[in-house]
Amino acid sequence: MAAHKGRRLRKGAATTAAAALAVAALSASQAPGATGAPEPLQTSAGHSTPVPEVSADGNATGNSPYYTDLPPLKSPLPSPSSTIGTPVSRGEGEAGIPATVLDAYQKAEAELRAAKPGCNLPWQLLAAIGKVESGQARGGRVTADGTTISPIIGPQLDGNGFALIKDTDHGAYDGNSSYDQAIGPMQFIPSTWAWAGRDGNGDGKADPNNVYDAALAAGHYLCRNGWDLSTERDLHRAILSYNNSTDYLDLVLSWVDYYRKGTHSVPDGSGGVPRHRSDDDLPRTSMPATPRAAEPKPSKPAKPSKPANPPKSSPGTPGSPSPEPTPPSGKPTPSDTVDHLVSPDLDGTELTATAGDAFERRIGARAVTKDGKSVAKVRVRFTISGDTDATFTGGERVATIATDAKGVALAPQLLAGEKAGTFEVTSVVVGHKAEGVGYTATVTPRPADKLVRTSDTALTCAPGGEFAGQVQVKATYKGAPAAKVGATATLIKSAADPSANIVGPYFKDANGQPVRTLTGLTTDANGVVTLPKLYADLFSGTYLLRVTTPGGGSVTVELKVSATASASASPSPSASASPSPSPSAGS
Image 1 (cartoon, helix red, strand yellow):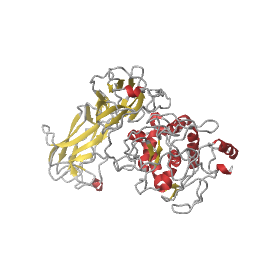
Image 2: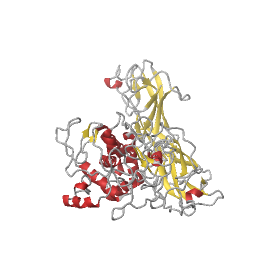
Image 3: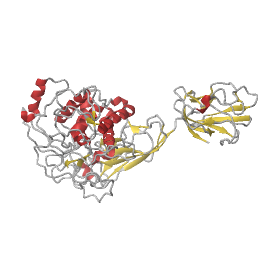
Image 4: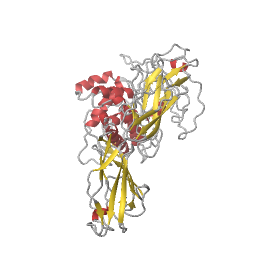
């Protein structure tokens, strides 16, 4: 048993006896200082078997090797006095998680809770994957912003005991222009990071070597396809999509269980690094390359070689590979025969939907050869880009679909989201350079064709005072309450001149300054919007306030400023407060 120290396999609440039995079944191990990557396929006797070529985006890591150290049997619950910087008792595994790394996991969980509440992603799952992939960024060797002090790069995926994944990033991330290598604390392969990468620390870029970016990307990756990680089935599917190995699944689940029992922060750089890797018994034929400078100009790619053979999965599932078979040596794969993608049937049809609605038309792409013949079993990746919150069904902005017998891949249904604007959807053949096809889609604002005041009480005020009541209007569209409709309120010059006035009543912005145009107002579930308080300057007279909405809704409200009006002579203390709700203001 001593030879298996640190290699116990525990599932959930497994007993010590069960854990002991699992030791004999665990055949993979890891070495210090190396980064996580996929394990080789194992026979029942524990011997390595040839690893088939896999697709460049078959999973997050490309089935790279990973650390196999298991958590200690003792719960990691810290003593009540445990604080950052306080020495803690360590066992065979590191119970504490470096502070910045732990913060990245927890921030990613919080963002996913808001963005995809149905996923139920626990930060402990990210911590478990981070542990087996990179030893929590090599014990927390990260800068204050979460960037690894030195790159974490896995072995090159050249088929020697690993998957075969030819270069997809021209060496931009991993410094290898021949084969891909997993990169960063969560060990994404470049082709997966290209569409799954996220900006988790708000610096405007998605960096796989930053633990905040990598953790958020991993969270979104695990939450794709509408998976609910509170269910065992979807949790297992998500983990296996990260690295397709049952040993990997069991290992990650054991760390999830361990961290659920309690953990604590340790100073960055003080975390333990695992000692055993899943490729310990394999020859190390190459060392990780040194990555080039950030975002270099890609060199001209070499002539495409035959793409990899992805794991089997059901065609038509977003993010999943197609069942493209491994071809006989020397024969092209279906992807190799594709010359370009064409639109299957839209023929220039406009893609337009109202905010909050689904687009009626499904976009797609047909893979064809040079002579126009359709190509089946080709993976096509659809990507949404642009300044809107449009997504595919399930909340994703990327979907990979296999072409059917007619060579057509239909993307999941497009959902408009709430932000109006224009966006693009591009399509490419995964693992093969071929001209793609793109679409432009427009999200129009929610409309209201009628606005009315909810009260007929006159609005009056003394010069320099505060109007006693607030203007409230109700929006309807085709007779029904219009919810979530944007509205604009303007103190206009006259009924014939809708431009903003320069004197008379005004709103206040967040700094207490006068403004006479408000945008960003939104009706509630009943179609009602209440405007912020109004104030009067020193000029008496009758003034007009106009509220408008997309779709033609408009109402004009009369405001009177007179010395005889029964209003406070000066603004009340609440007048200095910022308007509520918080619309955008313009003078």
